[in-house]
Amino acid sequence: MKLLLLIRTLFCYLLCGIGLLIFVPPLFLLACLPARFRYDNKVFFMLLYWFYLWICYASLNRMTITGEKNLPHEPAILAANHQSAFDIPVLGSLCRGSSHVWLVLAYYLDMPVLGFFIRRMFVPVERTQPGKAAGSLLKMIRFLKDRPGHLLIFPEGMRYKDGAIHEFYEGFALIAKLTKRPVVPIFMPNNTLIYPVYSFYIYPSPLDVVIGEPMYMSEDETEAAFSRRVHAWFVEQYNQYHSRQ
Image (cartoon, rainbow, N blue to C red):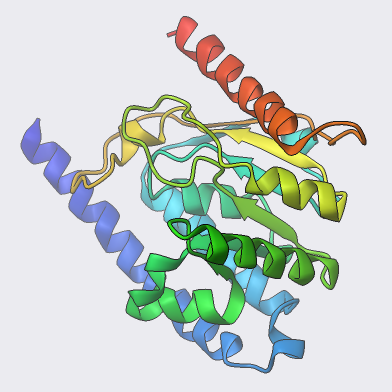
């Protein structure tokens, strides 16, 4: 079994490598364009969509989406739980090629290729320093007010290999309040089984996605209360999913 898993994993990595060779060069060139041409560039985001899909299919696991009708046509905040590196292409693919921006941890800026794309296309946040974190949120709010794209975020702030739903940072709730955008909760139950944190192997497991109805922050609702409401949806999905297993 280990030999078969190794062969499967190496084939997955081969497919991912081919995808990098196909998509990263044109994406890199488009990201070099001036700001007025790159942030809402339809070619860039369509290529990025195909790249997301390629990586998802490279896992050799079938993706099943529940609640696809809940994907918004209006600009929204897509918020997902975070278990695995595969969460990124899965969540990104749900934008269907429309423009979007990621709120990304600043330590990824040191990675050669990824750091370049973060600087050019997305917004880094320094989670460990409250002053810088607040500055990043304000930058994101200004960014979103000028552009129609989605915001993609993992409210837990990091990957958790136990698969459970952990405490949320409330920054996404503040962004929702100030931009008047709905939060679309997206639960991915199995990605930690497919590609656990720090794992070499890529395992066979259902690539399930559950998309909830858009959640709007009411006028009299605090950021903490809204964050708890969104968090409660994820806990409910987690309990329902695992009760069926």
